[in-house]
Length: 77
Image 1 (cartoon, rainbow, N blue to C red):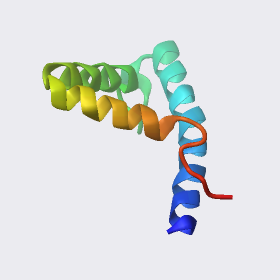
Image 2 (tube, helix red, strand yellow; image 1 turned 60 degrees about the vertical axis):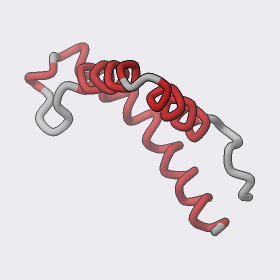
Image 3 (cartoon, rainbow, N blue to C red; image 1 turned 90 degrees about the horizontal axis):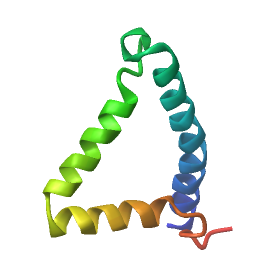
C-alpha cells in the first residue's frame, strides 16, 4: 500500500506543473490552437461550477481534492 501511495504522490508532483503549463499555453495561444489539450481553463471553470452547484457533496469533494493535492498527505518515504 505504501508503494502505491508513493506512486500516486510522484504522479501528482508531475501533473501539477504540466497542468500549469497547459493553462498558460491555452491562455497564450487560445484553446482552438491546443491540439491535444483542448480548453483547459474552460474545463477547470466548468469543474468548479459543477462542484459549486452540487451543494454539500461538492464542498466535501472539493475538500478531498484539496487534501490530496497538498504536500505531505502521504506518509511514505
